Length: 343
Image 1 (cartoon, rainbow, N blue to C red):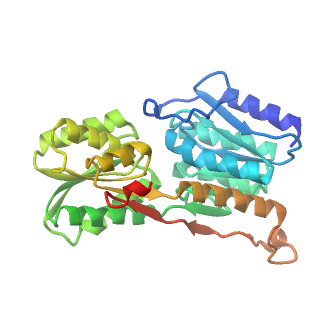
Image 2 (image 1 turned 90 degrees about the horizontal axis):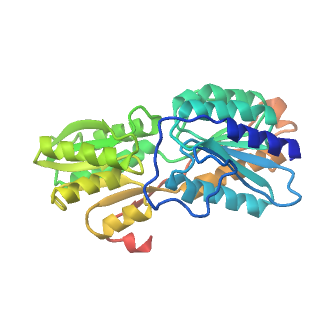
Image 3 (image 1 turned 90 degrees about the vertical axis):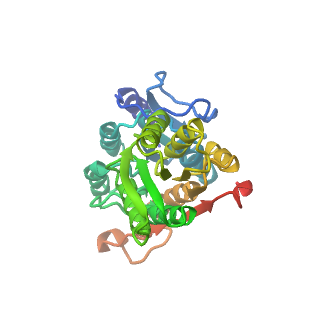
């Protein structure tokens, strides 16, 4: 892509203004992650090689979150190197959906070859519709955004992830005990997960659901909420987490209250810290996502649209045909003490 696009992206990164920080856990950041902006609260990352003429842009939020850096962004950059195209990663360093929306809208006039957008919040739907209307191949990943008119959604079935947690929790508790869930309230994917969990435990009248709690994807907040639940309900039997920091936060509170084994923990994601806690017997069960898979495939779908890899008519655009899958669910990975050594 022309040098002017690179300059515009630099300017865009410098204009990002963020708030409501979602901090990474200490020592968890990927050492290979760099930003073109001199300010740590503003980020734009590129992987470029001489002679590249196409640019594919990932737009997310909480751009420095280790989960995103180590999986989504790593896979996206590796895909770009393999295809010989330029990849850029844009978004605020904090959990700031309005700034993610502004980033999408400011990128649209630059006409990138494709947009890979993290489905963080239903509020980004209008910006996605603008990108699609501008003729930019657009794939939403991780969490579906209803009414966005995206060309494709690829990611996990969060209801299924919640159902798997609920079924495992019921088995761990032998159908009896008080349980609670936590994550980011209001997020489309996590709310679906909460519903899946609750539906899975409904057949067990001996399980009492205490409610869902907003840990804001923060370890300290999750630990405090878990400690409060233990104090208010000394007989609480289980807690389930739905963001990457829920499990470690719950585990911290359970360890500090000397309730390892007495409070069963299930949670999403399979970062090194999660795996370590499973090996220690603190966390009982993980539901991992295939993040590298849905990111790399999502990027490939953008490339296929751009290059007309598979034509389904004489003129797909004129015929209103989208020559890539509309929805792809990549599935989950279940991890417990029996198979944790493989990860």
